[in-house]
Amino acid sequence: MTQIVVRWSEPLAVEDRFLRLLDELERGRFEAYRLELDKRRFLTGRVLAKTLTAARLGVSVESVVFDATCEDCGKPHGRPRVPGSDLTLSISHSGQLIGVAATDGVPVGLDVETSSRRADRSLIEYALSPAEQQAVAGLPEASRSAAFFVYWTRKEAVMKATGKGLKIPLQSITFSPYDAPAELVSSGDPALDPARTRLADLKATEGHRAAVAALTTEALEVTEEHWLP
Image (cartoon, rainbow, N blue to C red; front, side, top):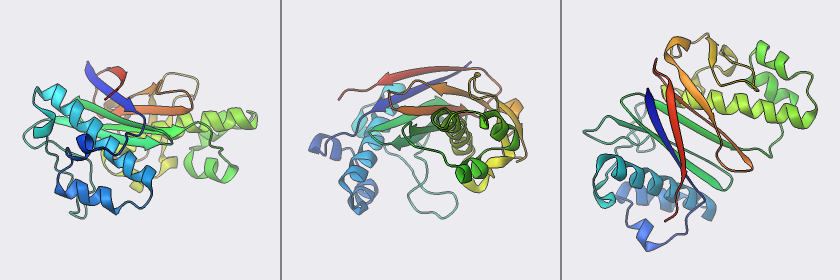
């Protein structure tokens, strides 16, 4: 059994007690954001990741240092890693919700989206495989958009787990029906093997849709918690 903890929070206030948890590189990224909400989302993601890491490793949160070096370009905007640990993390945010997923020893990916968004035909044709497009074709508009974002969060989660993101064609992967338990049915990309991919739809909070994925053969046991500073 692969155990995953997902920790959620609304955007935190920009306060010294949170800012002092950022290292120099993270502080630079924080300052580079122009919009206040983007600053708060980045800060919240790092605070959630560091408090969760500290709890799992049994260390002080002040001692947690991440290596976020991008494997493609070498810049410090990759997924956070903990040197010397097999803990894996994934951060996602949308609207007023930020989340961090953590597990041990296997790649993990988290995605959250606001559920108020609409999915037009061009987006559906771009993102969904033929089988998934057929599954949503006869639904009323609101139900079709809701079903689309079930698929979308699943796709984003598994692609984040691989570290390849949108380099994997969205139409190349097909999931179980939107109203069935999440499962990767088929993949046309070698980075994703259905036999080694597990995922789960999440509760998150009202107004949001979310999913988490891990590259493992084991079943997932997912715990969601809402963090209060």
